[in-house]
Image (cartoon, rainbow, N blue to C red; front, side, top):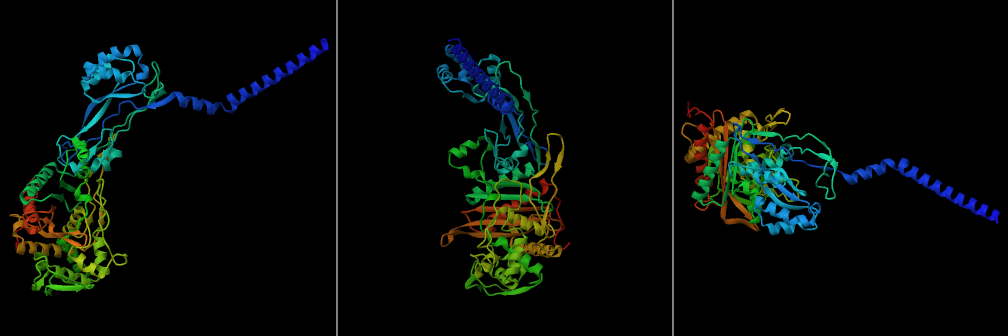
Length: 571
């Protein structure tokens, strides 16, 4: 009997020792082998990173230091119903209702829900937010945030873009420089409650230092911008156009002094345009809309012919009124023959046959080499969100045809943006140097460092001599045929355009895009202006619409920008 009990005791002892051994081994595995990983998982469950109020977004100034953007403080009022006892919901709602100017019953229903997070007011005033903070209610938070405002309303809207309620920049400079403008949020790290939105009471955590966003100083001149927008609005009303674009640039650097398109929008109320299904209005037509430029493109054709040696600046040709290329016959806009003409007449009378004659004389390889060199078919690299590349078919493309050489010579069958077109004209004004257009002159970083943007030369499509010759030819063309765009005291070089609008099966029989691009003073070009009017009703011709707008703009902008008159012709 005793022996049996001893065996049982020894067996139980052995079992207990084995179990104890297994427990020890498990403890060693948990605490030693898996200890580090389990500690990491535990911390991940209770330690979280929260974003305290961020510093405001970087500011944007015009070239004279005038503010184009500001940041207004507001408060986001949030609640965590899980932290609010059921018996306290009614009393808490009664205290909050007069502060937030909300019905107490609606607040009570919201605070009594089973949600772990609810928004009570996403844009409370500073007074309301501070009042909520003073109430010091459990489960209620008033969080400071910033709202982007634009003190000039719609002025320069397409340049600036807008900032959403979530703080993200869209379109224009706000979109392109969003990363630089956006402040780096401070981050609090510590133990949080079950909603992972609030720290536990009486807990401490570490906070990373906040970094403000960079400020941007632009090349944009606010007074010039206001003039451009005023004259564009006047033109739309006077000529019955559906929309339009004006770009003003310094050809020597590529600095954009004014850029506007209509229809426009007010970035302070961008949501209205989304709700009205007008979100397409946010994209600037100046950089994002492609169109067939029409006769303004003859500037490029003549430049290529002169620079390649296909013709001399004094050359003449016989205009027979029509010319055949690739099986297609091209005629002048009025289907007339003009006889012997020089290059100034070709541009002044805007003769399609003359432009096609030059392109054929050069040959397709030479012609398209110059078109590419002027930057067509590729983005300009401007620092604004949403730039289009244009459309250009060249020999070797599956959809290119021999007749395209003739059509492209006078601006049909290819697509450009207004910014590409003015950049090409600016290259002629700038001694043949093609500059990258830009809007930000410098960035002021949070640490005070200033990053200055230097002008960038994209290429030299034509020689300085060709540029001088072509400038004189363009000036003579204006003096012979376009008196309506001349400015007293300033000699102007420029070219009109009346572009047909492609539709399925051909071109629209009624509507056109009227344009004019010009620069001056011819002796020392400091300003280049492009005007584009969409579907003008009073006249389809650029010479009777866009050229007039150019003259009004130039007459106001030369003195506004401190550009002195040049020498009169012949002096």
